Length: 204
Image (cartoon, rainbow, N blue to C red; front, side, top):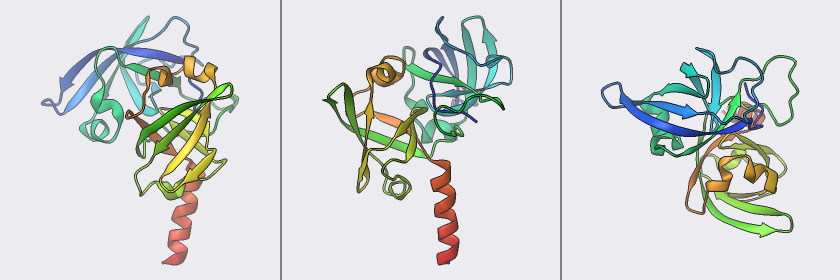
């Protein structure tokens, strides 16, 4: 489990095809100023990489490596990662840690496309478009994780929704490198997912 509060921005150093070229191994450099909760970079530990929960298979002082299946590559932005790609990092939540964002599982539900990014007072209003099947799970003032970042939804119109991102968040996540037309990993709020499932059973 994670909180959606990014503890550092890493950089993809290398991408190595594995599994007959269908899967991939990513080597990710970690910044000196990354804040880790504990032993996140140990072998077998879980790290959310731009919102995707991945397992550390090897690690050094300033890097770690993960292996990713073809399924994950196809259903997340990881399929487009290359050396130099910026990656939001968050180590797994420990029982007793402060929950400053919202509960995030690291299981990506789909991709959203950035429609626009417009300065608004002291922040930037970002508008995203979701796949139609995910739109019902997003509500005004609800929580959503985008590239692993816990954010509050401001407004929803059809399959589009908006969030405001303050300069601190932009400077300390890979939102600083994103532009309209780019896609981001989306994890809908866990409560919304289970509520929709319950309502579906009642209708059935």
